[in-house]
Length: 146
Image (tube, rainbow, N blue to C red; front, side, top):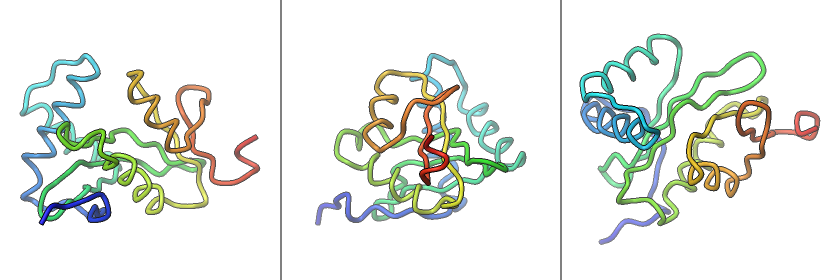
């Protein structure tokens, strides 16, 4: 039976996800014009987690479909990484994962992120983010939207 976007779940990563998370991080950096070895990609995620970033994976059946890495600050949540496997893009998986992530994050805070490519910017605008100083912002309430 084929899995669809309705089967996507947000979960905490398990140790079996480490290799795929490193590969996805490596892919993310490559798309943004940076060279990163597989070892450096793995260490990068570990260092960010030690510095206070949280992580969740997008799970499609038993497959790790992507991941997100974020930090909750005093005024907002900053999403540092958001990645969907390349072969799952343009099928609604990224948008479904973005909405799952937004539902998971504190509702009392706006969500901010930086984008480095036109494709990423176009994607986040369709999710509901708007241009803001230093990146894009998803306003959670009318006061912060002003």
